[in-house]
Image (cartoon, rainbow, N blue to C red):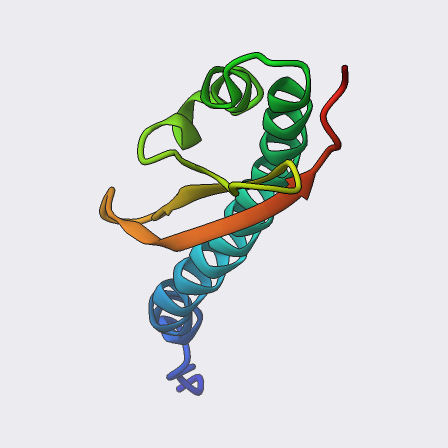
Length: 114
């Protein structure tokens, strides 16, 4: 009689146990990348809005033009009364569930050009 190997399905069971952890880890990494992209985009939009305000153009339109489509929804542009400062806030979409994780904002200033 030959010895029987009791570990025939062990690798499959371990793979099934590890898959949810792997998916959660990948979703977390993707969410962190999306957060960084939102932060970078908010900074670019804030600089564009501050430049537009400095030359007398619409800062909101300039900010919207410099944002990727997924960040345009929920865009907030606040202008300071003095100093040429503009703050742009965007929503960070969620990787899972289609909701939002939070908001990121960036502030930029540019002196008025005359």
